[in-house]
Length: 325
Image 1 (cartoon, rainbow, N blue to C red):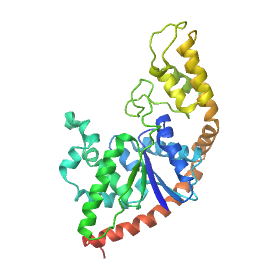
Image 2 (cartoon, one colour; image 1 turned 90 degrees about the vertical axis):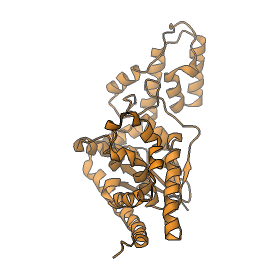
Image 3 (cartoon, rainbow, N blue to C red; image 1 turned 180 degrees about the horizontal axis):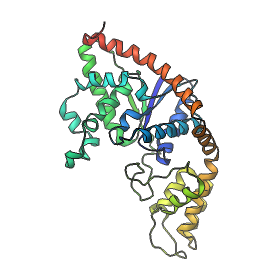
Image 4 (cartoon, rainbow, N blue to C red; image 1 turned 30 degrees about the vertical axis):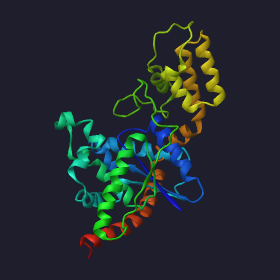
């Protein structure tokens, strides 16, 4: 049996990039025979950038509702908030003491912001270690990640190997990344990678009128309506291609190449495709957002299951380090 683990930060509401890059493929993996999935909301990680507690609680609910909206089976699998299982933080400290400084200073997450060290907190610097703890705590075998996270998985394996060497046995399971080559990077409305930090994301759960305003912001060139357009270089077409059917994609491609079809037409088609394809997830999402007690009950149930496994791992680690009672 393969144990799959993935998490999404609660630093904002889930967006189309999260859904196509993590939620949908993660749930598909969870439905494969023999797989056991551990999906969590990484609210401890969000503290690196988000300090407002009330905002974090809203985002946690939204992310939980999104997983459920797309059909995650929380009864069969494990679904929880990272912060409600204290062993995440405890194991992260132990692993910090096995992580060399150069490894962290070479992490992409740190190097991207290292030119302004005044803006870098210790949480950002040690972010990969908490991520390693998230994975190693549950003996996960497979970690679905984007290409940009592959380095962190290699660091996780390195840290675990260092600990296992001390232990003299394989206490911590070395995970393997699983990268979906078809969905590597989801473009945002400005053409960069869709990201909360870039404020360029599409929230498919917005009311229709608000969603329309976001779609209209997608950047396009100045090619006149009547002239042919290059579909491969257009952001709207790229986004449409990620969610529409093969026939719908081919129709839009021909419209671009034939001319007489404006970017406004393409954006309207994208909006309609989002509303149609995600109609049921939007309905379920709104249900859970309006029924917080039910959502809370589901998370508490998952946290009980997660805690049992986490405590087994941490007990082994404590024994190796001389911290057991």
